[in-house]
Length: 513
Figure: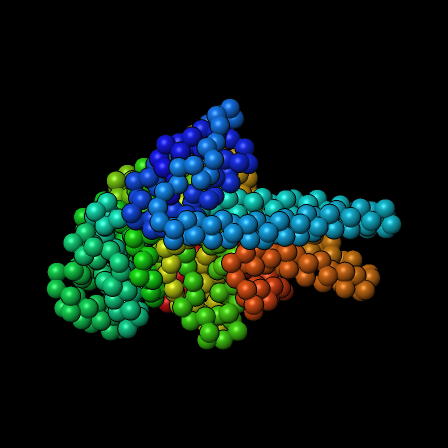
């Protein structure tokens, strides 16, 4: 293992050699048992953040890799194995980079050819070329940031803080029992764990399941029944008020935590006092149910392992998901009153409470990050109607919170060099209007020249393949094809979700209950 002194020397240096050393340290630390090296891991994470925020001259020498490594032969073999794995990851990075660059060149070449060879279609060509170039650059930068991502190692039992887990439930039935049992079975010291289960005025047997779990684990589950259904946001407010933990984790009642999820999700806040929100990794629990759930599973991989990993590089994950997120309680107390009373266009905000809480914490100057090793599985809709309603609810929340964040972009947010999150928020708001302008011009082109439909289909397929290439970094086989399938399905069957959500953004109904 690399010593504390050597790590400091590496951190003070710069250049590719230093980056290679840091990657080897990260991989070796994870493999050799991060809990035993918690303090050094936290220190290393802090020094990396300092290094990113402050430029330093590349003058100090980097010690030879083997100079100060100690430990058993098995540890040395583990480090060598991790180094080989890193080389393999670099190969995937190169492949993805080449594919993205090729797609970028193809978009520009297609647009230029359209302008030069078909002057009558120059307006369409210009729109497609500009929007395609910007979208491709945005995707390339997202991949670049995601490839830099590293999960924070977990800490030892002795270092773990007092933690509260809040599970709000409404008409969830027996599923809430699975969520609570998975929290109770987690690898987290029982004497440091408080679990709060809240029935938000359910009309089914949800409360009986909560009572049964609480009775089976005396003193470990605080069961609360709301007098009437007031919404998930109010249920969380009740939970926050009763929480006695330094950190708090929220878990959806239709979700199941992996055994190490709680230990993993608190690590980023322990390593960095500026982090006040952590997003867990969400997988689909009923992935094998049908084709739709397989497609949604592919979408979740892109959403979390790509998008949120990229946002984490700047400490600005825009949405910490309701299925699994963690917060710093002293930070939550600063915003909970304003968050709970939030209105938009004269209407109380009753949806997207997870995205809204993240927004309030970012506005306060805190950081939000992604923790890939904190895994939860959640149930997804198995029919198109319920899936569409879920996506509409999510999109309404995204539109609302992007608009809410716009005034913040000119405040202290900018002083933290948040240029990428700023661009991302603006891009999210303008990408769809630009896309619909392009689609309108495309429709006119197809009516005049039906054969152009083949070209359009080719461009859409190329974009779907390039977007899904990232999945090959850690997933293989059919997952890639389901990723391509979802991208095509979204283009053909879900194009209407954004405009509909935009014109109905004031509608705060949950839709799937």
